[in-house]
Length: 175
Ligand SMILES: [Zn+2]
Image 1 (tube, protein in one colour):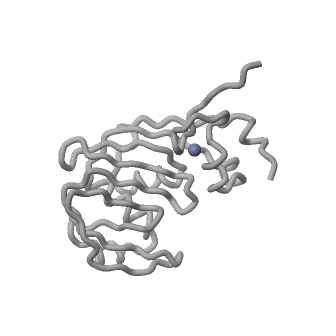
Image 2: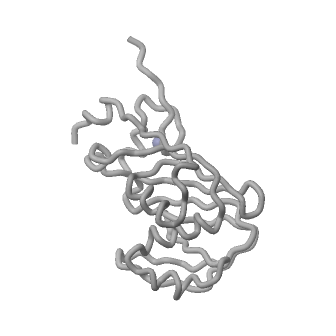
């Protein structure tokens, strides 16, 4: 029987499974088995995605948002997790969060793209500008991320959200 071909849900490369070996090795497989992952696509303005980022990194510390990110053009950046691509950008400060990660405060204008990964890397989202602050997001999200999107003011019914059914090859993987 010919084996099925997939495109890895995280990196897009061809794979024999829904998640390629490389992306799988960077993540906790046991956790993937327990979580439901969703593929999401839709239109989302920049200010809402910005709010989502702040909630995702400091949900229990709303004071961080008001203290460090008072301006609309201030964005969080974390090495390996959150990256802001903009025509004009500068890091104006940084601070440490509870996880031990360093958050850079980036002042940015003309944002082209922002990529976000959760600490577990199970969520991986990209926001892309369509026209100025109008934009779209797409990527993979956990239930927890959907909750954070909702808290940020995203009307989830306006997005296309589809659960990803993982095949036996991943679910039966021995570790
Ligand atoms: Zn991959």
